[in-house]
Image (tube, rainbow, N blue to C red):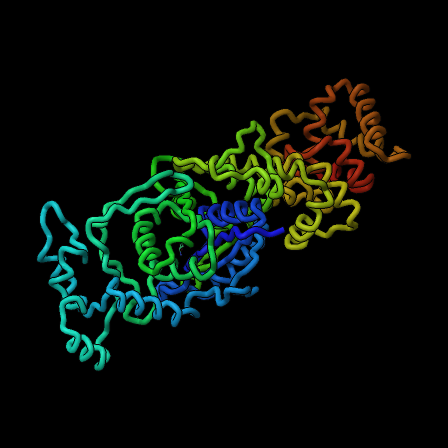
Length: 507
Ligand code: GLU
């Protein structure tokens, strides 16, 4: 069953995908799917100066990793193609010209110097940054002022121009935001936004309205930073005669820095040591790679669960939701108005919970790939499965499987002798010397028999078992971590256990 609900995610391909962007995509997707509608990816690449090659594929990859599946996109196509704005140039121009001929927009031929002197001449204490608006437009070089012949003459010799929207005076633009409720703006405070740039490309303001209309978008989710542009967009919807088809707006609250105020930025991530981007992003110029949630070891399920809860609540005490549950529960009424502070510890908590609750079989492909990358030879898959079950509760990030599991397959790369040294003595040394023989004599090598033999010897030697388990663990694992030590010994096998004990030296 499908409905007519259509939402879109409309990023500009300018670099790494910020987690705030992923959250916008996620809410947009959840809303569409809850209503059996379609979710569209539209690439807003009309600002050629900010365009970064590779960023479009990267965005598609990030969405795919998160499980935010698109119904239509530049790469998969769809009934309203093209979905890349740079390929829709002619469409926008046609609407810009329509607005000019209706008298709702005009050609402006002002040079950068003329714009600069307008700003300079009109600057006052109460108006420190004058804008191109109803107060100055009649003093500028545009088709509202010039005679039609003068305009045609300028156009005939290819004088660079932009097309500006002529904001109507003395109007209150009121709309109902799905998150913020009724919002009103005074048109006299708005500037005559450029719609079509000198290079023939539309600005965001024109393109977003035209595309949302032509692509039949019913609900438009975007970041709160676009709220000041909303009245211009609404005026354009009206001027183009499309008011009845206008989508409902949802301006999402910002994701804030964990400390202080303001939007969470890439620099905050670098400063505080956590990722901001969904996946690794390499800057083509500097070759510098910024870490992503995926690569530091987040599960996509945990990442989207965490993002869903950053600005929305289900109304229940429960915090863990699968994508399917989120689709079922998501409601715009429960999106918060206030910004949400990002909390990396909480993000890791989600990941830990998701790892714990995932079946070993589900985690297996990723852990295996991780081990291959680290050149850890996995003797057989069944063993790896068993180890995943044994250690997954101890892994907060997927990469923790390296530390928590690799010693089952290979000798530890280093031994934390410092953990053993303070309480080490000759008796313990003798205990471990004899332990080799005791272990060697075990016929059925399992955790219970190993534990029994170990404890018997401790009793004979009159040393507390608790004092011996730590050194034994460090010998086998390399450090003070891992599941039950006798279980570890069982899995790594008799010869290897004996060897690791014999190899142990306190430097
Ligand atoms: N291209 C805009 C951005 O990069 C999209 C805003 C919108 O969704 O309308 O944020």
